[in-house]
Structures are given as C-alpha cells and as structure tokens.
Amino acid sequence: MPIFEYKCSDCGHEFEELVFDRDECPPCPKCQSANTGKLMSAVRSKVNGGASAPAANPGGGDSGPSFSATSPCSGCSGGDCSNCG
Image (cartoon, rainbow, N blue to C red; front, side, top):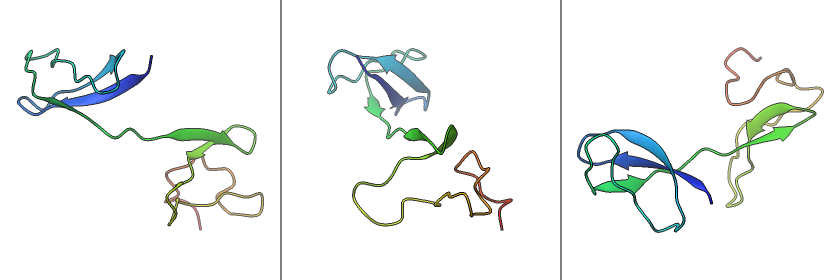
C-alpha cells in the first residue's frame, strides 16, 4: 500500500495517507472536508555510494544536476548545489 500526499482545498492542510485505492482521496484530518486532492511527490534515489540525488526525468529534458567524481558537486547530498562552483 503506497503512501500519498494530499492537500485540503478548504483549509490548505497538507497530509500523508496510506491508501488501498490510488484513486481514493481521503477526507482532511484537520477540518474533515472531502474537498482534497493528491499532490505530486518528489522522488529521491541513492547514487554514488549513498549520496542522495533527484531521480532521472523519464520524460526527457533537464533532470537536474549531474554528479560525478570529478564534479565540484561530488560531495553534495543532491538538490542544493548553491555552494558548488
């Protein structure tokens, strides 16, 4: 059973829920509204012996920074390369 992220359109509360049916949108645990929607979740994966980086974009295009042993970002944990050259 996957855990999905949801947001209530009435009160703005974001929450996670373990669901049996992918199409199910559970009520908001804060205000009990049924006006909730599924959010897109970020995907993370392990690369280069444990550094965390965003997953590749299967649809093509820019999938984010590339990390290699010669890159100044090789020690990054991924996602925040503001300190890299």
